[in-house]
Length: 214
Image 1 (cartoon, helix red, strand yellow):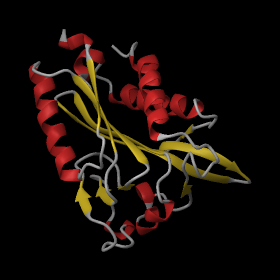
Image 2 (cartoon, helix red, strand yellow):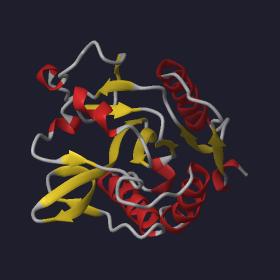
Image 3 (spheres, helix red, strand yellow):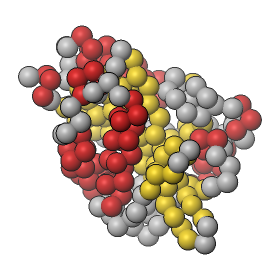
């Protein structure tokens, strides 16, 4: 039965952003119509920046560095690229509970639990979207971003976890419009899982968090 199934898809090569959005648009419509199962798509993108609906043009510091795409999701500027695991989450929230705040909290919990699998303490911060790591001495870095869109109570877009991206690529933007803090990754923190190992953790912790989100 479609209502009891979440389809997992994993791309074996970087997916260009327009192709990813096109797939999500089609899948969201199919989920709403009952013609396709809920879907989580794990992938990497080639280096690019995306602009959410709240993006401030002044936060695009190096507009010629990588392609820039209007994302249609909430949030501001984000970077995507190799070494970052993007998870596009297409779920029927009408069936699971039409509560956007609860859904975002569940996405945060999913990332926090996944990071814990590798010995990293990820934390929420009031007023700052995403998942953060306390580096000590008053320093905090962002390790994962969240940006979603919901259409007819079906979600799309999702989360991005920094596994081992080139962190210098974030220098072309003010990530999520937050200037006082940096970005980090699992590898930068000294934890070196493969992308396959990260995917295994994401799948296991998704079941732990979302099995009860119905």
